[in-house]
Length: 77
Image (cartoon, rainbow, N blue to C red; front, side, top):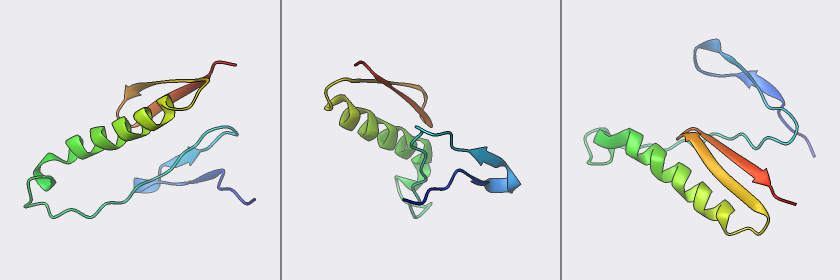
């Protein structure tokens, strides 16, 4: 299965995806004049919470966040 191991982000910043990391981008288009558009950081927190809650349903995994953009998952077995 093909994978992307490195790329360039915004502003030409480089990023690497070491083996075992699940890195992804979610693009959402929101009207900035909407209630949600006025609270973009809230949307980021909701997305992180959804991933944390989903991983917590899997037996043998522990998950925590260091900030809304970074989730750390530990295999307990």
